[in-house]
Image (cartoon, rainbow, N blue to C red; front, side):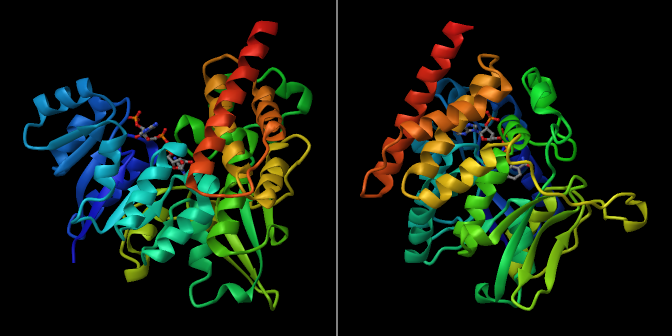
Length: 388
Ligand SMILES: NC(=O)c1ccc[n+]([C@@H]2O[C@H](COP(=O)([O-])OP(=O)(O)OC[C@H]3O[C@@H](n4cnc5c(N)ncnc54)[C@H](OP(=O)(O)O)[C@@H]3O)[C@@H](O)[C@H]2O)c1
């Protein structure tokens, strides 16, 4: 049966790779809606190729441009359009490949409409995980991880229950600064931080990988998705990015999921996993060509984002949302050349310290905390800019 898919963030790294998966399985997958934010020029050829019935863009001007090139597609703009795309009545699955907290409302909208969500947008789970998972449960919709680490854990768990897990081992490439000293980190450039050794990704997640905040976000995601306490989630640096994560069971046995560092494999698993493994045309891992296969503990001193994420995850309430929002702002400021690499996590930590969580915890508190964090982070960035 053909699956009707909505792809939010279709012009990004995950969105484009998801469309590759659709090309490889055009009998099984049909794209019914796409979205773009800045790169509308890249969206237009995608509309012409995949013929969705609806597209969501950022502004009225962009909508006019798309209508001029693609007169048969319905075009919406602004936040409302993302919500419309997320709850189309004929949708079977929403692939959320947006970046940042912008992914929260569309995820909730899809779940409200009982549409399964394949989630690449990790910031949604980090900021509003308990609420999102409760909504999925309430509406009998599935939340399927796309991130390679969580996909790996899910694959290792086939045939086992979470009660059988002793610990989760989440692997990390270590990023571009694994061998850079703390002293040298003071002077790294934007291009240094964007030069990821194994994965090609959007700029925000690439910087998160350089600070190891990405691994911190993934630890929180793993805790939420698999219900394992933080003290039983271990991060292990594996620079070759072949083992995508592992599960250690109660009897001491460990299962690992391996493959080339190619996001199309976990994306395809998210789209079809439950209905069996289909052929994929992507490159295979050749063990005879692997010269190194190593593991080491992460350096928590050089990469303080990792401990901060564990702490915010354990503090629960709105702390993860605050950490996430402050990080988004700080990463953008770094990419804009306003602050240095080491300032990123320092600013996030300061914002988290400034936060006082409410005792009640609902979606409005999450958005209020997110706004507080963005304002506070911006103030700190402005102060640093003035001092410089
Ligand atoms: N890339 C990977 O390999 C990878 C792996 C695992 C998890 N993830 C996660 O997947 C998500 C997407 O990552 P990515 O690397 O694909 O990012 P990306 O390349 O930057 O793409 C982000 C997409 O979201 C759109 N977008 C950005 N800001 C938006 C906003 N405020 N409102 C609506 N749309 C917006 C972008 O549109 P325009 O391009 O048109 O501006 C683009 O289509 C992130 O949460 C990331 O952590 C990524």
